[in-house]
Length: 262
Image 1 (cartoon, helix red, strand yellow):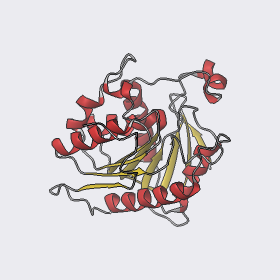
Image 2 (cartoon, one colour):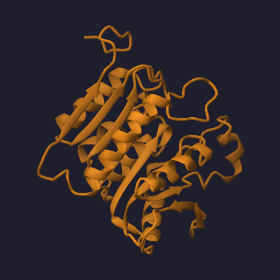
Image 3 (cartoon, rainbow, N blue to C red):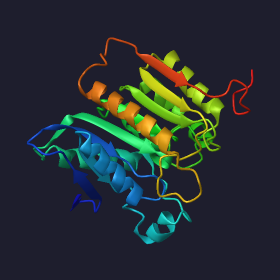
Image 4 (tube, rainbow, N blue to C red):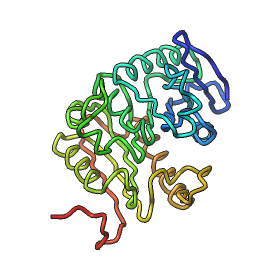
């Protein structure tokens, strides 16, 4: 992947298919560990799917904590204002590249950055689609404890792009009642979405570098294909602004102890 350092000091890695383009743009955000091999692999993989792929380092302000963050021993919490600033700088850079279409952008957040696409969509940044993987709706996202972070409750009514959500039945960090609440809030506020709830999937099931058994190859392949199809649809204009599209798919056990109580 090609690496650039922008004026702020934020590093950005990019890859794109062969040919002149411009290709639809996919911004791949890193998890709580910052840019690590798993994220680079994902960014390259989305380029192989036909997108201009960008991986920005949104932790560039935490230069003194990088080793601890990469080891999971510290958190690089982002304010919403910092995320907006970094996105604006990144899009300015993308607009100068012939191979990327900055008017067709999908952003995907994973784990800690799951809420970031929702922030940008709610704050007037144009996204063709906002992708949320096993994040964005942690309990702390409904009642944020970090300074400078807005509640997802106030973000959802202002979202301006279709949302793709991927969550796991056995994710102890994103309880199933939160998934139900997220779905209902999107519907109540007339927002188009596609949400998938995968059976037997723990938190961060896509990480093939994990050694603790969380990686689920079949779920990873299924969720990836669904996500790519969504991205192709929204960047091709298939999701019209005058249509409300609501898709929810779940195949979990009906007696699952993780289901919300009534």
